[in-house]
Length: 283
Image (tube, rainbow, N blue to C red):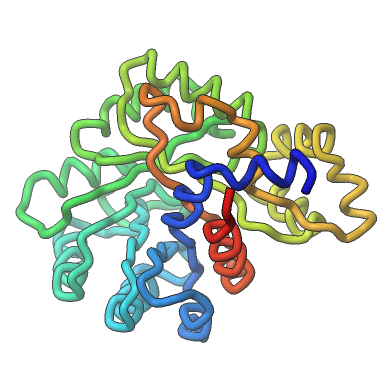
């Protein structure tokens, strides 16, 4: 076994992979996607203008009843008012769901009174609910429409009402580590859930990356790990390598990396198989 194969079998990486959350997009027939992961797995359910809040709730209720630990996403810009927010939370409580991931959402126009995740979090804080854990988004490579200092200020604003942050995709371990260190120095202590692309063929990875705007990170990947060659050979991307390349920063207490959030892009079965295979390896 080569050095690059053994680095992914450290106890720390195995633990992170074992406990990783798998993101599922609730497309039509989403029930079959849940059947591809073992019961007890933590799954997150996306929320998009295309499918709406009801689809997210329906998939969440289905998954919870089927025995999965579920974290629904909630896009603030899709919520019309506080009454709809309370109804969303009420249905989560009825399904015994206690974790929620709050994002602003990418809807071109707001559906109602909320324009940001911070506004929705403030509203949540104003009434009783059964949520015990709330996550928010963060952007190691920045956001195409929001300056970096504004992003940092937004995290500080949300910190008192959130419990963890989930990073947008980043394929460059140095960029991720540098951003995380600066974030900690800036006073943001929220535990980080690293947003990690699931294993997939390199061609698919390139298509997805360009669509979601992490082109600079993709260029890094192509230089460091031969993505162009892998494209030609049809090889797959190995997400555990980013974790290994973070080195000591991955487990340093001051960095407070708590978990992995796997962006499966609905390659759910392959993601679950990778998780089981890697988590079960012996160092």
